[in-house]
Amino acid sequence: MKKYISIIPIRSGSKGLISKNTLDIMGQPLYMYTLEQALNHTDLSIISTDIESIFLKEFPSNVKIVRRKKHLAKDNTPLSDVLTDLFKSCGLEDYIAVLLQATSPLRNDDDIYNAIKMYESNKYSMVMSIVEKDSKILKYGLMKDNIYEPIHDNSSVFMNRQDLPKVYSPNGAIYIFSVKDYLMNNYYPTSKIGVYEMPKSRSIDIDNEEDFEFVTQVISKNI
Image (cartoon, rainbow, N blue to C red):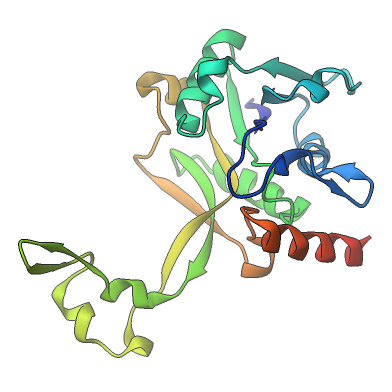
C-alpha cells in the first residue's frame, strides 16, 4: 500500500510580492490554506521553510516543520535541490510525495483527490496539474544568426490561431511522484507524466499584488 506525504515548500524571500507566503487572507497566513488541504489527503505534512515565525507557531502532531538550509533559500535556488536535500535528510524514500505550492491556494480537495487517483492507476511516473494556455505561443520562435527557428514547427507559424492545437502549462498546484524514483536522479521522474487539468479560475499561482488581491477576493467570497 502506497504511503503518501504532503510537501509544502515556502521561503521568506520573494521579489514579486514581499513575504507572500505569510500574507494574511481572512485571518490566517496564505500557506495555511494549503496545509489544511494537505492534511485532508495525507497523514503527514512537511513544511520546508526558513521563515522564523513558522517555527514559533504550534501545529498538529502530523505536521513537521523542517528548517531549510541557508544556501537552499536563495532566489535562484532550484526547488529540485530543496527537495533532494529534504528527502535525503528526512529519510522519505518509502513515501509518495504530494507536492503542493502555497502560492496556489485555489486548488480544491477534489483536485488533489483526483490527481492522487490518477497516480494510483500506476500508469504514470508522476502526475502534475496543468491549465490550458493561449495556443498562439506555437507561432513563437527563436532567432539564431538572423534565422527564425519556430519552437513548434514551421506550419504552426502560418496557421490560423483557431486551428492551432491546444497547449497546456503546469499551474504549480499539484505534483505527485515517488520519492524513491525522484532520488534515483535527484530530479522529478519525467519518463511518463500524467496530467490533471484544472480550470483557469483555480490555477492562479500568486506572484504579484494583483494575483494576491484576486485570490483574496475569491477566498472571501467562498467563506
